[in-house]
Image 1: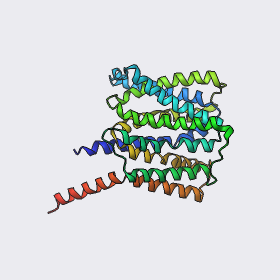
Image 2: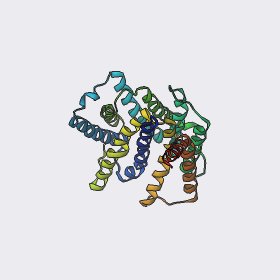
Image 3: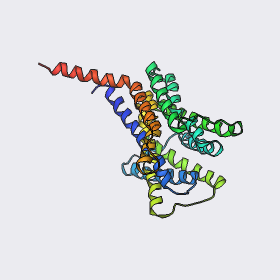
Image 4: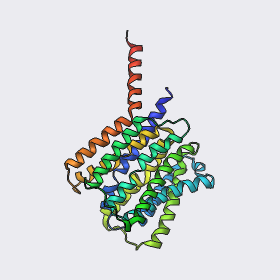
Length: 305
């Protein structure tokens, strides 16, 4: 098997995290009035418990025993991103905070240039900037940012959330020897810290009815659960620049899902944003696309009479 095949497979596995994160808005909208940190605590707790049980059933529980520095890195990476993101949307206009936060895919592409064996190419930057433009158009609806000096703490928190997640994703590559099973421990630790933040800052409100609890379980299963495991696999073994550029599909797909389920409407701006993100992802993934095409031609040439 070609050495590039595992890299391609890992990249595709990592991109499934983007698909799962696109359901965050839909499940979140259907989860009722449960406050963010309590939602985090419940979802990460459920994800961590189920993952730990699965790992134990396979006789691989020993893989969760990691040095303190590894556990601290994973827990504070997951918790730090969510803490600063929630702080941002509470202290700045949510649209502005969301746009600033969504610079993390661009930062992943830029930071990845400092990784061993990686090189930042022009088409990676162009593709990622196209994705950023699409995401910006979507979240601002073409009206632009409304930066208010009085909301500087919120803007700084949004910058911190972007830095936390991009740094976590890129530095995970340096921990390639750490098995993905360790993410179960990261989830459990994040749940504990989120519960502490809930008790300190929020009033407890539980989901009401089967529908809201179903949405919470959906969150725990996919965007706040399995997504972090496949993302870990992707950033450690796949094409991290393609993953960074492809991440801009999350807000687009999330919007399309919300529209499909009656939480919004399809507009020209949404269509343009989808086009920009799609083109950007294709540009960023140019190497992988051409590599696959050239291999297919090589196989055809070898098998032809």
